[in-house]
Structures are given as C-alpha cells and as structure tokens.
Image (cartoon, rainbow, N blue to C red):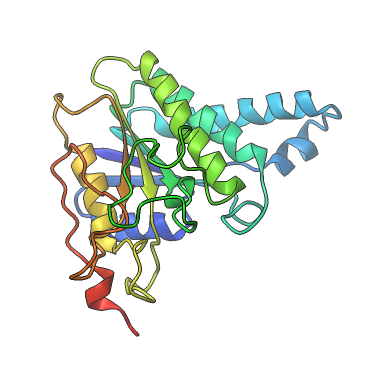
Length: 258
C-alpha cells in the first residue's frame, strides 16, 4: 500500500482525502508548526533570525514525516489571516518553499501542491466567458495574463511559479502537480450552481490519478481541481482537462440545493 502524507491534516480537504482514499492508501498527516513555538523557545529578536529558525523547524518536521512516503499533499495554509477575502501571511510562502525543498531532497515520487482557483481572477470581467479558463497564462485580453482575485491568489500563483522553478531539480521519477483547487465542503453538496465546486470524489479522484500516473506524465503540471460544472448553454468555467486520464464525475448544476 502506497504511503501518502498530508500537511494541514485538520482541514476540510484533508478530511475528504482521508475519507475517500483511506482504504486505498496509508495516509498520515501533520499540522505545520507555528511561528509562536519558535518565538517562545528560541526568543529570536530579529526578523531574519525568526524566519531562518522557523524555516529550519518546518523543514525538520516535514522531513521526519515525509521520509519513505510515496506522495506528499501540501494543504497546510494559514487561512485565518490570509484568504481570498483579506490578508497576507508571508509564512505561507515560506512553508511552501520548505515543502518543495524537503519533498525533492527526500525523493518523494509524487508532490501534490494545492493552489487555488483564486490564482486567476475569475470573479472579474477580464476573460472570455464563452470559453473555459485555461490552466496557462491567459493573454487573450492582457499581454501579461489575467491577474489574481486577491493577495491570497497571488501567494498561490507564487506556489505555481515556484513549482516550475523547482521542477528543474527533480530526481528521476519525481513529479509535481499544482492543483488550482475549487470549493470543497464538508457536506459534499454545492451551495449553488457555480463553477468552483469540487465534489469529494472528484477531489480525491484527481489525487488518485496523479499518484498512479505513469512515467510518461509531465514532470510538472498545473491543473484545475473542480467538478465538471456547466449547464446546457455554457462550457465549464475552468478547463479541468489534465494529462492523468482523470475526468470529473459531478456537476454542481445538477446537484445544487437551490
């Protein structure tokens, strides 16, 4: 049985992945250490010392848990202070960097990183709504590509760019998938007929397909983690196609509670 490590193990997405895939994989999890531990233990007074000490602590924690794993799924994120509606926590970026570095150094075959649909400003009017939003920079209206919805989205975009950078350092057989995750809820029911909903089986299905993908799959890829949400007159908001042979099974327009 393959071993899968989840960071951010107390969150909703981790709960869903355990529930859906717990019989197929040996799933373990960790909650990322907080800066408060470093401040209380070492009492560094300079920001650079605080950041270095914190990064060292996170890397030690992740390395210990990741050793011998077949896949790592990075879900850990401080959403209390940074989410799509407000805020910015630079430690989220530092943690992401630590996870990339540890996963590559430990030779973990499958590195799954959770970005967000908010890395692309789908809430604005800067894209062509007659076509699904692509997973590559959309330059149809702006030569620099469409921006993010928020600072949170920018942090997630950084995760994607960092993955592209670190892909150059991958060992043989290692692969990175950065998933622009949509809305995953505890109830597994869409609140409305929108394009961001991601059902439990679709959320788990993409992860399964990535873990089991063959060596011909790309070493680095960005995919949308959403269900096949569309009505008869409109394509899905996001182009969920991927190189792992996974097709989402659910559609918010058919299951909405409204």
